[in-house]
Amino acid sequence: MSLMLLGLDYELFFGQRTGSVEHCMLHPTEALVAALETANTRHSPKITLFVDACYLLRLKQLEHQHPELQLRRSAIQRQLNQLSLKGHSIQLHIHPHWLDSDYQDGSWITDTSRYRLHDLDAREKASLIIESKQLLEECSEANVFAYRAGGWCLQPFDQIADALSDAGIWMDSTVYSGGLCEDPLRWFDFRGAPDKSHWTFDTDPLKEDEQGRFVELPISQQQVSPLFFWRMAWLKKFGNADVIKPFGDGASMVAHSAYYLERLTRHSAGPASIDGIKGDLLEDAWQQHCSDNPAGYFNVMGHPKALTQRSITRLVEFLERHQDVELVGFEELEHLKPEQLNTPEMPQLVLNQLEEQPKVHQPLKRAFG
Image (cartoon, rainbow, N blue to C red; front, side, top):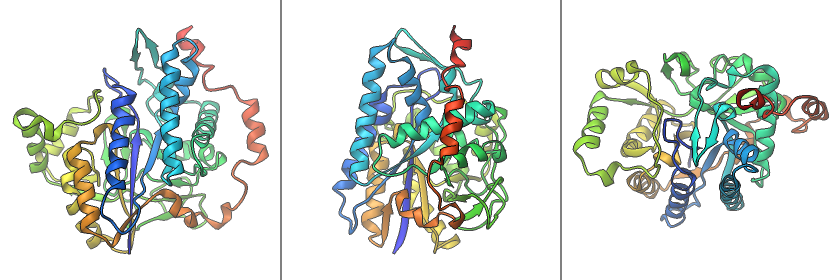
């Protein structure tokens, strides 16, 4: 039996159009879960949602001014609660730019000047992580213990390690082998990561440390040919729109020009994904996984906002074809927790520190008066 994980970053877009909660989060997640529930598999497939908790916090902060935001937060929390009751996993994802983004005339005005968690000061980081985790646990039947960095912006990890550890986060699932982004706003470099299915680390996710406080569960890597991206570009311009049209109704941030040039001219390392027509590559990603790390976890990522009906179909077809592959949630990995961390989730010392810290919304007074 092989174990597969599907971790979906549950969030809006961050471009000029953020899209709607209904089309970027609720509806695609409903469609995916419904398809999995009717799939002809030997096991009951489970997904993991890495929920952008900072967005939920921002809704909570502004809902007294904009009642429609309270309705959106309630709808999200209702869906998360229902999924958790069915055995799906809820874990932590943070895009801190929401702290500085405002809601005016029915639309979000996004400010990505603090796009990385590292852009916050130490107190803000600690408070945001603890509040985010607590908010998600109100929507979950299980503990929140895993983290995925917004935009893969995990490094330098030593700047966020203590805040995550103090909040009871001990697993990360951000790294993928060969990953590199040289855009200054969203820089990360995962080259040199251990060639293992998981490992323990402390302040550097690329350096194994048996006494470390964290476990890295890397996203499975996939080599993608430039022909794939040329095909994607052709389909967007000339193909059947229904084939590639995602559920999401927003617009992504524009990447650095080098990002597009590299993918159109050379093979690139990317995470195994079911986003859009990348779902067509799921079988290839599996075969690469079986060749590189057959005993490890097949860890696939995606975004509800980027799913298409076609990519959901490809996932179901894959699971029905591979009856020996079981799709499980991250709760199935709790046995990987380092022994030295078998202590209460939220020590009283941390709770006392939280009481002494300003809430994450207080800096907003500076930004918005």
